[in-house]
Structure formats: C-alpha cells, structure tokens
Amino acid sequence: MGDVTITTPRWKNVKVGRVVLFSSGTKYENRIATIVEIHDANRVVVENPSESADKLVPRHSAALAHLALTPFEIEKLPRAIGHAPLKKKWADAGVDKKWEEGAHAQSRVKSTKRRQLNDFERFKAMRARKQRTFQTKKLAAKSKA
Image 1 (cartoon, helix red, strand yellow):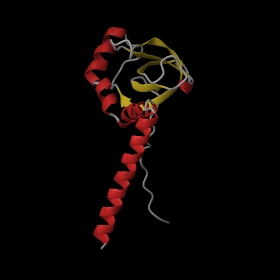
Image 2 (image 1 turned 180 degrees about the horizontal axis):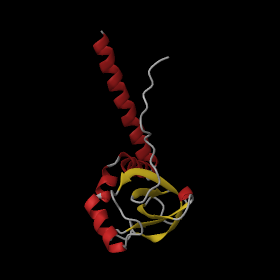
Image 3 (image 1 turned 90 degrees about the vertical axis):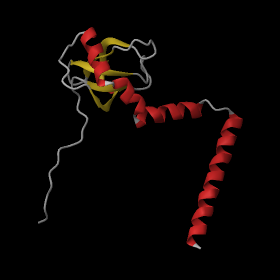
C-alpha cells in the first residue's frame, strides 16, 4: 500500500469570531459581520460595529442559511462580547481593511461596476477585450516563429 498523508481540513468552521457575509435576499445583503454567539446548529447572533451606516449590522439572530463564512476571523473573541469591546477588537483586527483587500470583495466591486455599464460602454469593453486577445495571439505567434 502507498503512503497516506493526513492533513487537517481547511474547513471554515462556525465559531465565535468568524466573519460572515450576508447573502442576497436578506436585509443586510453584501454586508459583513462577526459571529458573537451561537444559538444552535442553524442560528447565530451576529454584529458589525461599524460607524458607517452602509456597513452597520446591528446585533441580531441570523440563520446560517443566509450567511456565507469567510476566511477572516477575530482571534480569541469571547462569547457574547459587548458592543464596545467588539468594536475595539474589530478595529484591532483590521477586519474592514482585510475584507476590502480580499479577492471576494474586489470581484464584487468589479461585477457591480460591470452591471452598471450601459450598452455603448459594454461595446467598448468588448472591443478592448478583442484587441487584447489579438495582441496576445500576435505575440504568441511571433515567439513560435
């Protein structure tokens, strides 16, 4: 038999301190929050202590079915932490900055920008994409020759 390497799984577990993203169709769609307390296998208490109104998520119970777990986490967050200490830990961990630099947030910004293009702007983007493809194929053919 062959050698077997056992590694730890890379699952993102539901735990206090895990940063979550609200999925579409919810009141807080596309906002992030952190898990503050776990009710049961299906519900958690979440909160985002941000000062800006477009990021704020007040403390409430949310179904895990409406949340997406992110790779970000606030380390050593005690269960049922109050608002002020959570706000301090959120700032110390730099969650907002990490989120904005992450690939998921950047792809959301890009897709939102594309959705808002009008017909002529979509046409210009298509022509630019065709031009880039032509240039890369031209360089590839040149290097083969």
